[in-house]
View 1 (cartoon, rainbow, N blue to C red):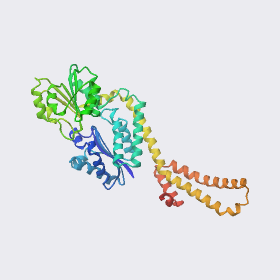
View 2 (cartoon, rainbow, N blue to C red):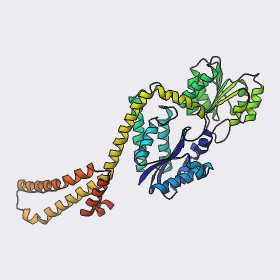
View 3 (cartoon, helix red, strand yellow):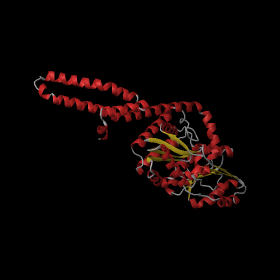
View 4 (cartoon, rainbow, N blue to C red):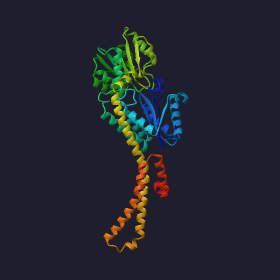
Length: 425
């Protein structure tokens, strides 16, 4: 059984294709069960964020499993498998483990070291558990990946000055606008991303912050944290006419603000420019909004330059983080190799104890006249012989675990000591 990763991210596809691949939380359980029902996928989890959609799976056959995942992504997005082939990446076994650990550490994100991804990896694992599509193997892998991500957070400076998609969105907006002084800011969406952008921009010299969200309770909660005001989504046409800067990050599965709505708002702005940063996936604003005179529409693609500049400044810490990830991957792989060998080692030692017990039972009548001290000496002698005979095979099995030679040793020991019945039991 092998681990595979099949996916696409901000590096391999433009936003318009990436948003077609996004799996919102409301569709996640159905998507997981769809994947698990395919012939060659045994355990599955989906990591879908504004930067990536990736399928993690333990599978019975590598190429067939990749085909199952590719077909799922094509069915889900409406794209052809040929269209996807140029954009999908695939990792297998050790490389798949390394990729997951790198993702959890924030090293594969558009904003290197961003804060959100570790929680998103944890959520992907939790959702798979809740749906019943993640069993022992995937759980162990994700749990260790999260541990690796935590080490990077605590042992490097990548997160001492937090960088995230939310903070990058605010920074890029500030660069385009030439500052925030006196700006009237509208935040659409009060989820984790919306809260991150609201909290970041609230620290700037703005004039007013307004929060719009489908859930009034969440909007009120966020507005309380940033001393903002709350409006309903129905009020967006009026609010767009008044705002200088808009951040959008709802979980809507379709366009929330059409071009016509913004055109009407712009007619009531008296030539004041409007800046919109749409980091939702799928996007909240009709992409055609960017063609309206006076409107600057930024999306995830526009954050890439900022991300690259951020990576250069933080290169030294990135190197330290990669060293930690490499260490954690090797530790995980070593533990996995030992887990593979452990049942055979256990069966071998049970076999040895069984032979010992059988021989002592066979000679019980001859040993009955021994005093307790002599009896103990005989049993210790037998134990010592058995343990010495099994010591070298045990050491060699463990040392060679995970290699072709180790596989040969495992098969040989199982055959030579007839251990299959013990293992199957």
